[in-house]
Length: 225
Ligand code: TMP
Image (cartoon, rainbow, N blue to C red; front, side):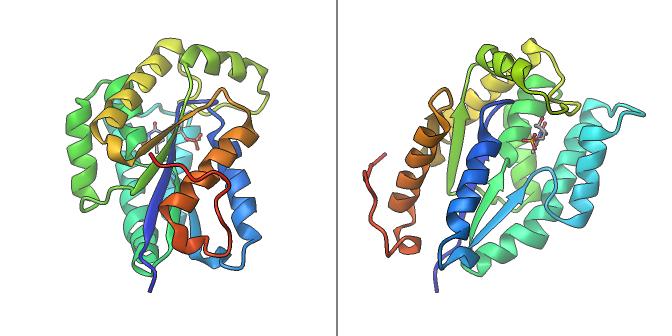
């Protein structure tokens, strides 16, 4: 049986993460083995965790305290990991998550500053039994560039996206911290490149990392990293 493999996508606001995940989902859905791949998102992923997502991102009545916010992200993750991610990995699936604990380190650790990034890392690992992604695509962009992009976007922003430039500068520092600390699993993508260029790079990396899931195709440009 194929071994499970856990891939996460990370990045600050307007980094193009959603576009890449959409392109990947479409690309994989056309393959014969599309059932081998499971897409999940955080916060959310299960019915209860989706309710927690609504509270976290859209609840405007009573703004959560930073510690409440941290614990709600953790609660959503516990639901998602034990009910969805681990069972899929144990069944040999490739799980592709739109955000995981690196987001908590960047947003609640570094940007909100309620706990050190190291403490957040140890808390989040403890509650999910040490589950660590095998591979993390980090779409790196400067907050200044992201803010320029955001001003051209017309879709509604969630509570956390609405934070100012300083907050998002700290988010980027948080990502720099974790991508340095756990660098073996990180593949950093230049988010200023075109969506197609970034996507081609992602596919090439996947063909190298999980070749058994791409047996009928050869990589166009096999890269080692
Ligand atoms: P999304 O827009 O990529 O779906 O992410 C939802 C928002 O939640 C985004 O502003 C980042 C934030 N977030 C955190 O602050 N901490 C976390 O642990 C996660 C998973 C997301």
